[in-house]
Image 1 (cartoon, rainbow, N blue to C red):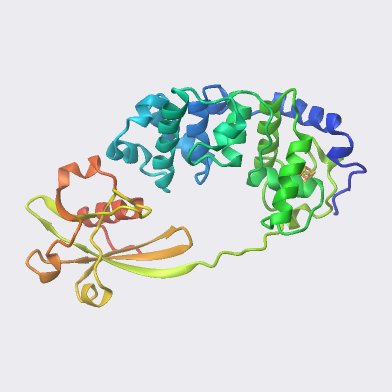
Image 2 (image 1 turned 90 degrees about the vertical axis):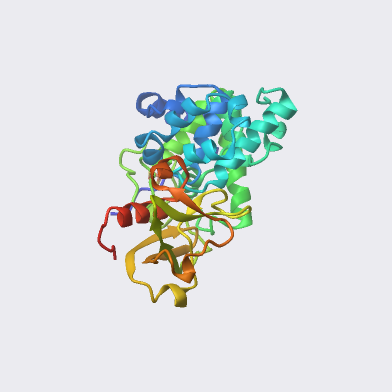
Amino acid sequence: MLKPIARITPLEDPDGFRAALRGWFQKNARDYPWRRTSDPYAVLVSEVMLQQTQIATVLGRGFYTRFLERFPDVATLAAAADDPLLKAWEGLGYYRRARMLRESARAVIGRHGGEFPRDHAALLALPGIGRYTAGALFSFAFDLPAPLVDGNVARVLTRLFDRAEPIDSTAMLKWLWNTAEQLLDHQHPRAFNSALMELGQTHCRPGVPDCLSCPVATFCKTREPAMLPVKAKRQTIEEIDEHAIFIQQRGKVLLCQQGKGGRREGMWRLPLRDKDAAAIMPLLHRRKYGITRYRVSLHVHECPPRHAMAQPHAGESWVALDSLDEIVIPPADRAALTAVLGGAEEIA
Ligand code: SF4
């Protein structure tokens, strides 16, 4: 059955649209810890964590609470050394976010005396803070009007207005931000932005939405919501192989600390070797993991301590087995190490 089409768009009755959305949100808002605070630092931490990590992971595994316990304010984070910072971020991935968060904290200390500026342009000028994050800080922390467009809002708006142009085109991005700005509820910016995002997480979810109980269905112009939004650019996934060696001797294991500039800067990985050389060693473990646009098969080979390949390369050191919990190891390498040390079978 085709979905009914609304007679008017939200821009033709913005007050009615805002009231419908706000009324629904007041009764149904989810209780997230970052909604219980107006501390811009705590809001920023939540926004950066949620950029590439699901809410369920951030909350369910306690990352948000633990991070704020370890770094409770902007000054503590600004003074954080690499190791404890990355350790607190371990498991969230995309570690550059943690360093950028610290850069933002340092700029708040250095430029604004430790207080987040209540000025949109000054927020935007902080390192790592783009238009979305500045809008989130402005509206969620200060309850001041600033538009927000994330994936959820973009999906809701394209469906409400039945826009089938590629959502990642320059023209559509401009339209999305303009529309979000025009619809913004200047009396209740925090509630409005939260509600629009939450509508995209709940009723107006990806795939087939729940239009029957949608609070703003009477403003929605699309007939085929599941077809929207349209995306132009499709990222191609590239399959690659990695060959690592596992060498254990005298209670230590050889690991490699990742150098400056890479995604895993400062983290410890199993040492990688040339495929042809490593492949002659017995295979202990194999697992797949995804990173950005790569699907990686990590092969871990057993290497005798006296073999030529066991000679440490630049960045490689012997690390005591009982200190592995204290250093930051990417999830795939940690899982491989755990499996190999526990004698687990190869994983396909
Ligand atoms: S849930 Fe359905 S009715 Fe509501 S905005 Fe999305 S597509 Fe429109």
